[in-house]
Amino acid sequence: MTSHKEKMKAYWKRNLRTLLILLSIWFVVSFGFGILLVDQLNQFRIGGFQLGFWFAQQGSIYTFVVLIFVYVYRMNQLDKEFDVNEQ
Image 1 (tube, helix red, strand yellow):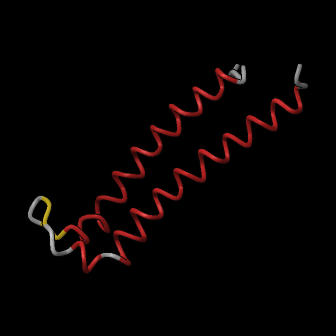
Image 2: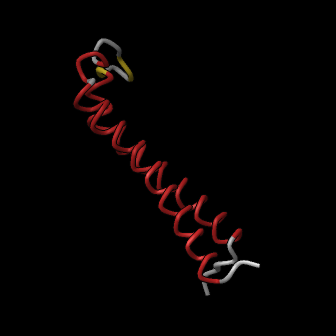
C-alpha cells in the first residue's frame, strides 16, 4: 500500500503535468499564432478579420477561457482519483 506522502507526490506530479500541457497550448495559441505565425495566418479570414489578427485579439482569450474549464474538469477528476476532496 502506498503512503499518503507518495500519493500526494503522484497527485502533484499529475497536477503539474496537466498545468504544463494547458499552459503550452495557451502559449502556442497566443504567442505562436498571434505573433510568430501572424503573417501566414493572415492569409485566411474568420468573421471578416484576418486569422492572425483574430488570434491575437480574440482567439487567445477564447482559448484561455476554454482552458480554464478544461483545468477545472481535469482537477475534479484528479481530486476524485486521489481522494483529495475540498471540504
